[in-house]
Amino acid sequence: MSTPLILLADDEPHITHVMARAVRMAGFDVITAEDGEEAYELAAERLPDLIVTDLQMPYMSGIELAEKLCGREELAKIPVILLSARGYVVSEDSQHMKNVRLTLEKPFSAKFVIEQIRTLLDERSGGEEGAGKEAA
Image (cartoon, rainbow, N blue to C red; front, top):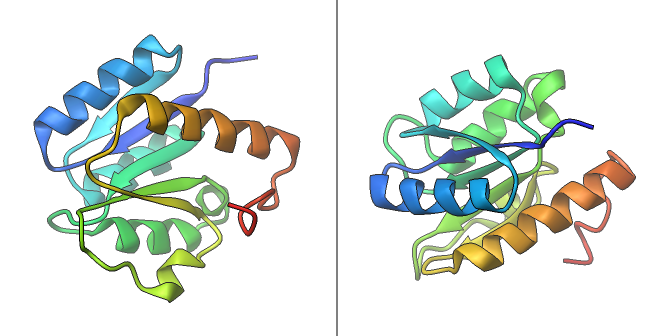
């Protein structure tokens, strides 16, 4: 079995750097993007196992990224974790997109995000169709 590939997208380089290091140390392969457009291109090219994306980014937001992923069959089932700034309200419609599995408010701990990545990857390997989304 190959090492899961995680795509991290955030326009704040320090967050991307810290998260990429932590995710690599947890045993995952990592690719990073600075905005939603770059993240979409990387997702289409590399087909990551999971995407962690900031909600508010230039060119294409995390929500727009998740929506665009849903438009392509090979990308639609990639689980997405949205990272939201404190106090930023994520619309109910966005929270119910099939690929958006979790929304986390900043600040967050890298350890907690890694735990969530592991949980979502375990769910995905146990069944491709949204195992546990409503229970979360």
